[in-house]
Length: 324
Image (cartoon, rainbow, N blue to C red; front, side, top):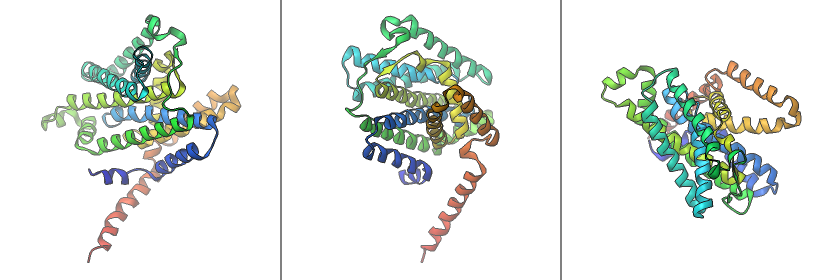
């Protein structure tokens, strides 16, 4: 697939939201608004990276926070003890998270059904516990604070996060539409037939796990340097479950769907702070309603499918009109 084809697959709403957030960073002098948008962008990165593995394969990873928190702490420690700038510590932490993904993938992806999910929960629980056991390095319950931001202003940090998210989503979209993504999707339906065709499905899944961990780690490091602190919540089971919910509402197997849904729902959650007493009830009820109305996710809803079908039908027609 050519880069132009990948760009054409970007949902118009996604492009509009990214441009709107960039305009807000450049034109609006409101650090609070910038902070909210950064939070939305970071959660979009979390949800999209989860979907890279779990969307095409149909697996359920309930331990995604181990990559997020691991990279967040890793980048913080690299900056604190080695004095590395985020320009270097963030990529290194993301690569370390990807390496962890490859290791966990090789150990857990041979499990099927609920056993894989249980294994990921156990790994995440171990990571959360280690953040307290190794409190000498991780700061225990207080975590690590005073992290160096990407830039000197919140608005510029927002632009950095938007650029990283956009590149990540484009890379994930290219991966999904490549032969690698096709093999993963096929293996979720009939893995034995795919293996009989000569494909090592385990190797493909490990690669997807590695990429998913890398991009999740990138999101965790982004969170740490934009919030200037990391704590055990980044490794908690609650965060992993939230990511699964956001990605499911967005639509599995469609990188832009989970990213857009996560960004919009996180902004909605922050907006519900005016009803703080009922915030959790309202937000949870809304998630349940969306899952009930759109079991295949918002990106897989009938309205979106019809628009996508019209776009695909219009493309050959336009190409034919240009012929002599």
